[in-house]
Length: 298
Image (cartoon, rainbow, N blue to C red):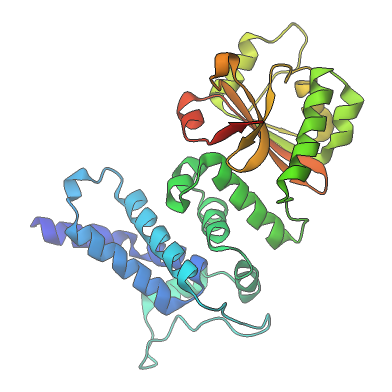
């Protein structure tokens, strides 16, 4: 089998998933096919020897094509909640296409499609790739052209819109007020004031580097930092007194905090503020992650 035939065979093995990814992002079968076709054209021109993870590479190409399409749309597609979804099982001649039938069976319902249409393009792409296809935010971030922190916040914002929850506050000054109150309560180890500024369902995320650093400095009897901690009381117990050296900062355009001894950021606290409360906190200490963040003090 020559290289060209091998590439075509490998692409066909991924076509169904690529079409499914594109349809969820675009809500249009013809546009989904266009995005998949663009991936094929790029693959046919690429040096296949340099592609280590073909599935991931193709998904990235399709996702970026979809993002471009979403951004270029002049008006949002209107579709009633009770209207039937696109007929993906029929081609132009009205005959059945097995691959399209598979796509139809796996397609999102029209109600969710309408909700996805309310999202900004980057929110939609981040949500679809992470929540529906399980891609990590490290993988999603370069596709949407944002940092890992920003990509996670895009998906979180999308998730809240879809669930009908209150959308995170975009006003940086309001964010600063909430983060400032959090930092003051944490520095003073004031458990009750921390509870007052935390959403009851707050979620704390920490990367491996942050967990390792916290464990190395954890006192006897102190709560252990883990990858994910949920609930105001659990988060407050971990962070009471835990942000003494952190300074207020703007992290990728949103209010946050950073621990930067000697002026070099060693750990970053990124916040999602909803309704005047801290709904999500992410602690980053991995040097490579920190390099990708835009951090401004003051």
